[in-house]
Image (cartoon, helix red, strand yellow):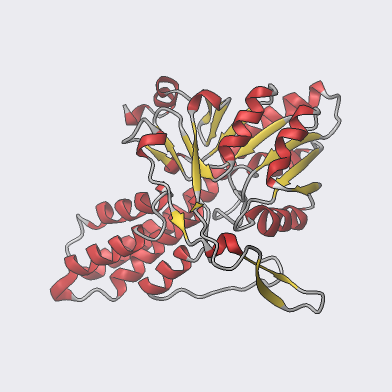
Length: 340
């Protein structure tokens, strides 16, 4: 993407693991849904005489692919718990397929619902601007390419579009994988949403000059206290938003909460990827060919942290399928009392 649109069939656990690791599928919700079906795939080839060992090995292989995204481990654990009560391998397979479908359907439904809650924020700003376009800045891709449908950060945007509320999206390019430039810009274009691509470091300047009304980002893991892990660079946007009195919201289905941890900076594992993703870049040439080129001096070492953590104090609110909550433990748990 965006120069080629490829539909890839995944049949084995190795296929699923490679697709997640190499980011053929990416984004919290889609990783979770993919993991649900990957688990089902593991059951299809599980031997009767070594079932438990096979499932544990497959689960560990899948979870290791992207350690930061909570939805991945969440989906695997949900599947393992779901099949415990089944007594035959056939019944376990049927249950796993049922749960995989349910995870995917819930993801779409939750994102649709959080979009409607986020719409209220956009409508309020639109009314203050007397119908002038609401300028929304986002970082990375948290749209329908990153979920089963609707997306998280883009769901309120699409809901606003459907409601006839004028919006314009500032799209961060999102180095080094360029998910904003490659995916969000493509997706918004397909959806017919006005948007402008900007370098990652432009957000603060736009905010200083009153050109951003609202920041909405997604998250790959959020603590019970409201700390948010999202694509590297999100923390800097939150700091700029706070300095310029721009609301900074995080949109997430509840499956992205990690209810076991409170301190995001200390406890959320941050994925480190190959430095080749920093040093090389792939694009389409004038002749229409895809080529990868080196952009740094040969032999230069790089550090490629995939995510950073935005402390809850910088978050204006969390947009979930149950409503919008302040980013603190008491309010979050009040909205999700089953996790007290």
